[in-house]
Length: 474
Image 1 (tube, rainbow, N blue to C red):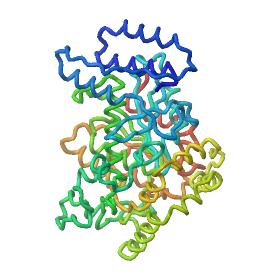
Image 2 (cartoon, one colour):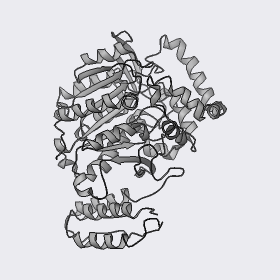
Image 3 (cartoon, one colour):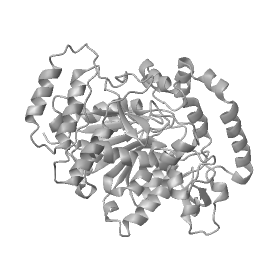
Image 4 (cartoon, rainbow, N blue to C red):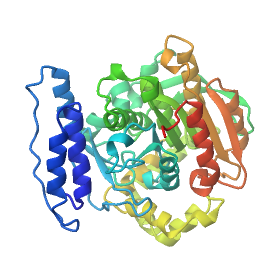
């Protein structure tokens, strides 16, 4: 079902263009254009697009890629999702990922100049906790205005993306990143005593930061979600990698992984805990990415490796978490109100003028969709997973070994000096890590500088993209 002929034109043109690798499509474009523009734009209509096969092409790889593209880009809808984002005025699009629907937006690509736009350098924006792709409203516009393609997606369980029941067997088997790494059982029954056995789900003797900018050694970093839920950083990392491969790079006409080149790689931009998902995605698939731009990292204060006296504190914390999962719905219903959300946002936002009605609406509305509260309480129970300093050290170790694709992958960090959740000294100390080239302190802003002070963050991000030799062609 399409309510806009132009959108249908773009999607159909893209399918034909990429399926046939730009062969003999001129007449097809003309026919589609004449047909679509003969229909009033206000008319909602259904176009049955037949499955196009190109078996007559001798290259079987082209056929397989075309078939996969068609299946990926079939337009669908998500219950409750508006066709256009109120925050960005961009169409909400859907990526079918492992039988789950993922909402995303793309700026800097128009229907009229699509063939030219897909050649622009690309960035993928990864949101933080309990928000969604609309939180990048000012970054999407800033990048598009500067000549870039910018993609923002809702992570699984967030925004308008699918929200399968935490731990539900069928969904978990398909999407759970921990299951693929550590096996299907909860970590409590699979921990190994072998210090070098990362597959057990526990890292030992890990260097982490402290609030005053020092370092410490954590005896254990538990990597596995305590309930075995699919809502974990490994799942989200795989989602980011697959989205980059299936949507962003294929938009640029790149089908085969051996065709990836430095100029085709994608830059990740992250906020808060989205940083951990992004860094893990780089660790897993470094050939897809050329750099990471971090806006206020998060150090997971409820992680078992971050909680002081965890042997005593964690049993109490886990009891509270379990109570919230089982009986927290009335509390959620009480808090999920526009006035309450506005008050809550005033804690991380130092620039309270940025908290407008649009922001409150686009953050709250998806939280009122089916399954959202279950994901919220499940995520609050996630006192495990990788941590930023650990991941950056792993990046350094890999780049100094045989992973040549990581040698020139820099990380820049900016942060708000008034952030109540992120200790300034700990962020500044990250400049001592090998992969971190630059740390920039932004005065007068809080946890969300990209939304509080885009006039500072957007130029800094553009500097980073130029550092990567990603300058749009004029």
